[in-house]
Amino acid sequence: MDKGKIAQILLDWLEHRSDIQRMCLVLLAGIMSGFSFAPFYLFPLLAISYPLLLLVLFKSNRFSDAFSFGWLFGFGQFFAGLIWIASAFEVDDRFPGWVGYFAVGALAAILALYAGLATGLLWRLFRHKNLQKNSLSIVLSFVVFWNLAEWLRGHLFTGFPWNLSGYTWGFSDIMLQSSAIWGIYGLGLLTIFLACVPYLLIQMSTVPAPPKKSILAVISASVLIIGGMVTYGMLQLSEPTVFHDDVKLKIIQANINQEDKWDRARKSDNFIKYLEMSKSPPEQGITHVIWPETAVAYFLDIEPSRRYLIADMLNENSVLMTGFPRIKRQPVLQAWNSFAVVDHLGNVKHIYDKHHLVPFGEYTPDIMRNSLSFLGLGMLVEGFSYSKGAGLETFHQENMPSFGVLICYEIIFPGAVVDQSNRPDWLLNITNDAWYGSFNGPYQHLLQTRVRAIEEGLPIIRSAGTGVSAVIDAYGRVIKSLELNRQGVIISGLPVKRESLTLYSQKSNWIFFVLMLFLFGLNILFQRQWSARA
Image 1 (tube, rainbow, N blue to C red):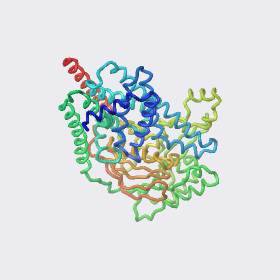
Image 2: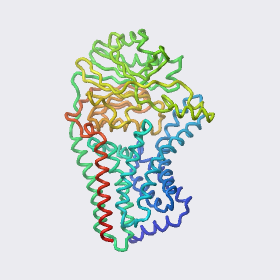
Image 3: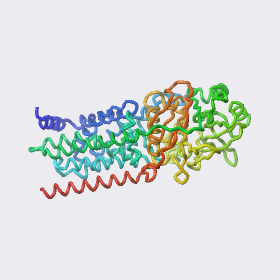
Image 4: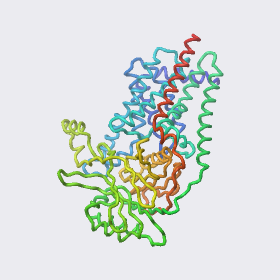
């Protein structure tokens, strides 16, 4: 059967669907797209889900309908991709199990507003135009609107740039390498364009005299994009991983369950477990022992007895790097999610306080606290809030490479992971992924860590309480790792940073905006050409 006839049959079938059926299709498409992210990486689903969204979108008669289609798609994508958040409520006795899924649904509903805005604007721009003739302009505009919505999602209201479109390439180190040029947001532009190619082919093939040159141009552009990404990625990965001669790391993954972590009866046993797993003979040459976020459930900076036990465990010229809770009682009680370096004499050398806190997890925005209390739902936000730290900082140790610290959630923000005025030689990400469950959350978090390494050209050492702990080089390659929910130790050298700065680390998201302006310019050019022909 002719391809044009197949495309027309699909369009006719969609034309005869009811509004409810179309809404269900779009919701299903969004759910499907959610499985393109880690750990599934079902990338071909994007080439089904996004074209289906665009085909259904222009069946809308009103802006509200177009907005709803985008919102439903976004809701399905976010609910499928963020279902791991429900696990955080399963370890909290204050809430019944269903509350976690309600929370995921509420978050997905809010995040989906960005998707609805993108599709609503696209519909308003092209609602009175010929869809076949303007199919390329529609796709280019959709690519810009969708990725601009992702950028806004990553920055507004403290930001939540989780599962950005570019992360669907996480199955391949090669395909991620272009993040060193334009970052994950720029990679998202290419990703959404490639996902929409089937939509272009469907629309072009339904024209009475299909423009073969246009179809060939679309296919050629897709091949060039993929080929360029593969070529660049292979060139980058031809560089071997080089290690510092004088640094040897020991990363501890104690695999302590979240419900046991803060149990008063088990705090001491947990601390001893970390100490015993960390001991090393002097000849092993360990310079850095690394524990994860809040591994020490004590106020380490004001409890010297714990530090002396740590000192007994360390060899001369070695240090412990660990997360711990820090408090200050005067003039008012404050607490921080903190990190400290303790030397072999028991002295605290450096302290870093987490500055990008998790909304509702580590603090509750005042407006939401007041609103929920007014509605009688104050129990959802009860509990103590952490204070915000001063910001990113680079730490220097004598005769050792300088480093920056990112605690858990802080690693997910592109372009905001290093002190640009004092760039470090490597990054340390300590995290407690026991909150994330065992489904997709820990793997998505690990992937974002790998992409930050590529963007910044810096190695990242990742210490996670229950996994996945890893040594990641400056090209995002996982050199060594410990699987999820496994107790163990990683002993490794420290990879060296890239010799030169990546373009992204110098220009940050400006490259992304330049690309969007370029696509916008192409869009205007194509529309003028069609107008001239008409």
